Image (cartoon, rainbow, N blue to C red; front, side, top):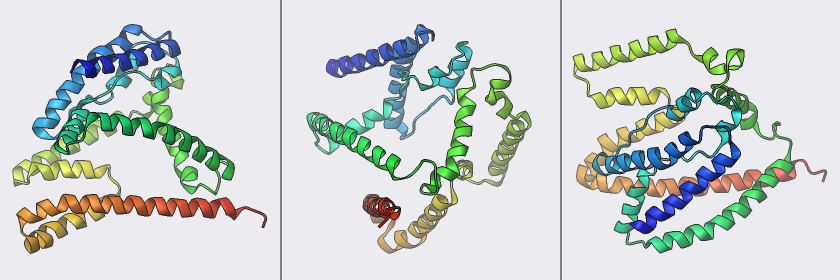
Length: 276
C-alpha cells in the first residue's frame, strides 16, 4: 500500500510543480488543495461507490467555479495541468486484474512498452494528417462542420473568468431556459410518480435527451431483442451470461472494422491529390 501511495504522491507533486511553473500567478493553495485534498477524497468516495453500487458521484463544474471565484483573469489557467483527478474507478480496474490473475508488474511492463510506441506513432500520424491537405479543408469534412461549433463551446469556458463584454459565459446563460428546463423536469418527474412509471425510465429519458439518434436507436432495438427474443430463447439466466461476451466480441469487431476503414480512407486520401 505504501509503495502505491508514494508513487501517487510523487506524480501529484510533479503536476503541482509544473502547474506552479506554468501559471505562477494562480493561487498556489488552490493547486495544493486540488492535488492533495480533493483528489484523494473524491477518489476514496468513488472507489467505495463503485464497489457498492457500480456508480460514481461528481460535482459538476466545480473546477470552473473555483477558477472563476479565484479572481484569476488570464486564460492560461484553463490549459494548465491542474492535478484535479478522480482515481476511484482505478480501484475497479485493480480488482479486475486480481480476478483475472494479472500481475501489477505485467501492467507496468505493458505501459512502458506502449508509451514509446504511442508517442512515436502519434507524431507520425499528426505529420501525415497535417501534410496531406490543409486543415480545415474539404479533405476533412468533420472538421469543417464541427470545429466552429466546438470552438464556440470551448470559448464559453475560456472566457468565463473574464469581465464585461469578453465573458461569453454570461452571454450564453439564459435564465428563462434554466428555469423552464428545471420546471419541465420536475413536472415529468411528478408524472412518473403519479402514473407509477419506474424511475429508471425517467432517468433514461433525461439521459437520452443528450444522446444521438445513431446510438440511441440501435441500443433500443438491441434491448427489445434481448428482452423479448433472446431471453426467451436461451432463458433469462443464460442470456445474462451470454450478453457480456457478445458485447465484448461486437466491440472488438467494430474496433477492427473501424481501423481497417480508417486505414483505407487514409490511403485513398493520400493518393487522391497526386499529379499522376
